[in-house]
Amino acid sequence: MDRYSRQIALKQFGSENQEKLKASKVLLVGLGGLGVPVAQYLCGMGVGTLGLVENDTVALHNLQRQVLYPEASVGMSKLQVAVKELQKRNSEVVFKGFETFLNGTNALEIIKDFDVVVDATDNFSSRYLINDACVILKKPLVYGALHAFEGQLSVFNYQDGPTYRCLFPNMPKANEIPNCDENGILGILPGIIGSLQALEVVKVITGLGDTLSGKLLLFDGLTQTTQKINYQSNPENKKCTSLLPDYGYSGCELVPSITWDAFGQLNENKQVIDVRTIQEYSNDHLDHAINIPLDTLDAQFGKIDFSKPVYVVCQSGKRSSIAVEILQKKYPNSTCCQILGGMNQMPTQCL
Amino acid sequence: MTVLLFGVTKDIVGSPSLSIPTANARGKQFPKTVKELRQFLGTTYPKLNELSSLAIAVNNNYAHDEAEINSYDEIALIPPVSGG
Image (cartoon, rainbow over all chains, first blue to last red; front, side, top):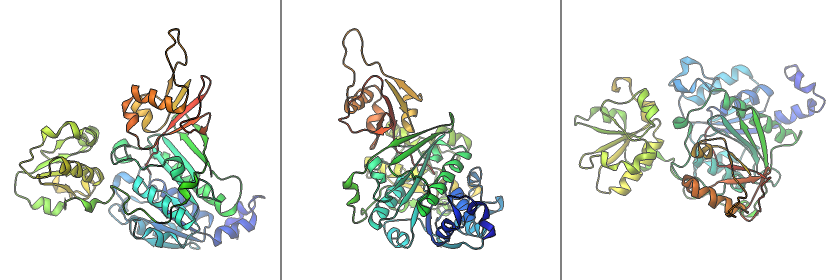
């Protein structure tokens, strides 16, 4: 137990709580900005079993905040790199990897064997799915989320406490709230909020201190101010007994898509609509791509020639799938498809 | 009264806080409940009406639409955020 002697030395913590950590099983959904610090600290502190859910690959623009990944791992599976790196830090931890995104089909099956769930995802579909699955399975959920220089933190569904839907009953529509790709994020912000999530996990497991159940912590990095908002449980939100048939817009395969390979083989004069922000577009874009940011699409249909196929691209494939849905609804006879994986997956010779 | 803005509401309004007058000489009506505050802000900043969920806290407590508000209250607009 020498390894953990510094935390065992804490009178309130002691070897009893170290044993509780060792006996616990924590599921971490998402190994991005928030997930990396959560995983690193829970691993270091000696959580017994750490489940990890992630299906993404490491990208160069991840490294400013996802500090577990070495430069040489760009392009590799985040899950596999993370497990390898974490095992080097603590060989006593048992890792259970799930190389998939959480979805309506696998969520209950994956979550059921764990004691605590950590939401470290980056989209609303996953956040509402995880909340509902945790309500059904009666699992405490440690929540963290970011916007620009701000963070939100809370603990849901803990000892009959309130849920995510008690704070935000309705899932935002597709392009209502900007994500990190569009909005940007300072590298340290997820480090702070993710570390606080790891602290809440320890408190949930050991019973130490007061968790953020029924309290939403708001952190503003620009002014170093924190605020705690008290909120109550709405019993209606506890009655959830099955997952919704659909958690919205994250399914890229729902809209017509084309791979970069197939796109590269097209000989025609391709009409490409780039729905990223002006800033993202100015950094790099395809030759001849027309920039129509997603939030201005409604006002700029006139810029698109619907007599020709329309290829829509964004950074990751999320916004382009939304754009294709909008275009198909407005112009049902047109041919629109998104380029799978967006600029993140673009082969270098395409630029 | 002071309204603190978080997440996308800060971007919509273009500043981290708002000061709302609670009385004036002409006797114009100002919001007296959370619901009236939502309507008042929604008229000035229509994009706020588009948010599917927008929590409002009064003096650091989550407030329902019927809750009354006064000039000395500190209000916070809290939308969900998704980044991770």
